[in-house]
Structure formats: C-alpha cells, structure tokens
Length: 136
Image (cartoon, rainbow, N blue to C red; front, side, top):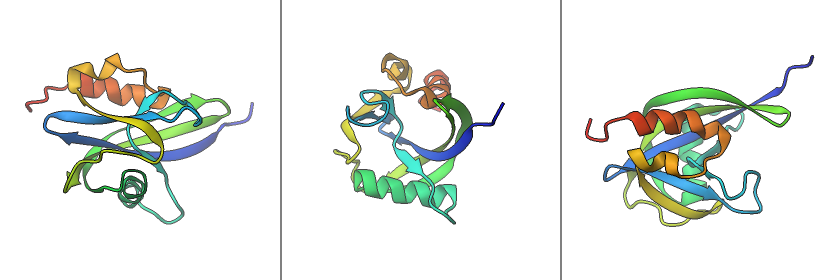
C-alpha cells in the first residue's frame, strides 16, 4: 500500500474581541461552502510563521503577528494527507472584512464554533477551541 502525499498547510486562529475568525470557502473551491481557519500552503524555505503571515496578507489584506502554536493534526482528504498546523495570531490594525478565497467571514464565539459546517482538517482545532474558556 502506498503512502499518501503529505501537504503542509498553516492556519491562523485569529481572536478579536473574544471571538475567532471563521472563513467560508467560495463554492468553486475544493470543500466549497465549508468553513475553515484562514491560511494556506507553505512555499519553499518558509517557516510556518512566515507562511501564515504571507497567506493572511494575500487572502485578507491584513497583517498579523503569530503568537503561539495551537495544534497540528493530519487528515486524509482524497489521496492526500493534509497536515494542518494551527497557530494563534493577532491582527495588527483593523480586522479583515473580505477575502480572496472566501465568500463570507464571521467572528464566532468559542462555544458557537461547532455550529458551523467545517472542512474536515479544521475539526480537531474547532473542538479544542470550543472547549476553551474565552476569558482565560
């Protein structure tokens, strides 16, 4: 049995006013209509933090600062394994209002995160965040 190809993807867990940014993928994209944390694939030579800062600037026209890792999970999607590296981040300046890759952005309370229909790779992070006390 052959091993699946591993694709490393970074995702931003951006918290603002006690809520977390969720982004709904455009219908024409893979997993269209599903919610995810914003981010993307690494480019050659990038660290996880560098890739995330670049991806958020490209997708959301927003600058962020990476604060700390949240978790890393692997999910089999089709013939590939997605290794999702979730990093906590904060917005530098105004929070984003639109995205190139998403048709809706929503700020969601921790306990409300499971109410959205998430892309499979994001589900472990959703469960962990939903269980957190936002007033930590």
